[in-house]
Length: 143
Length: 63
Image (tube, rainbow over all chains, first blue to last red; front, side, top):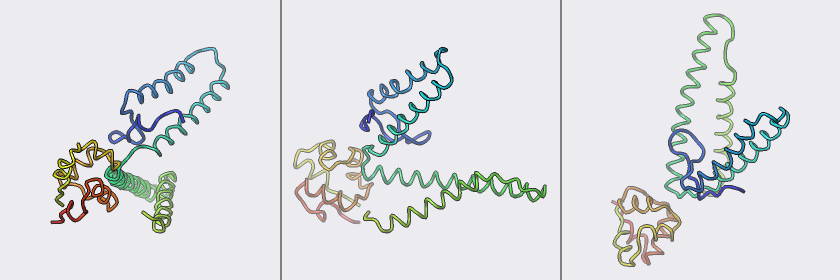
């Protein structure tokens, strides 16, 4: 792929993903973002061309970043820290999602109409499925 | 858990960075190991013991 995992580290503060740790990482960000921003700001492209270029660029960028994330150089201590941090953030998200669903349920009962955002429910359901699958697969795997 | 990594490392004139590279971890992990603030996996403990030409029992002291 284009980016080298050695140029990046996992993002520890302010979200998920990767963050540059060497100057090459910053150059990579510049090369991947600046030409695209310039292309999108130029007036003489029609909407279809913009859409196609946007789609291709996003696809390349997402695949490359996923590849970098998968091959990031992490040792066992860092993996442990990452796993615990991800678990804690998941608990925070579950708490907020549940609070949202409970609030909407309360409003629904009050107005006697169903006003639940099903994306919140779907998010919890997706998390439940992924957790179950992870447990099922990991229980059988050599760790 | 206490360790004697620092003593053995000095014996073989290895820096934390060199030991970290040999066992495939970050230098910070060696720092935390030496301070007794990280419990390594059996695999890492074995690798470190092998590099420092000693046994796990001599290197790691469970309090």
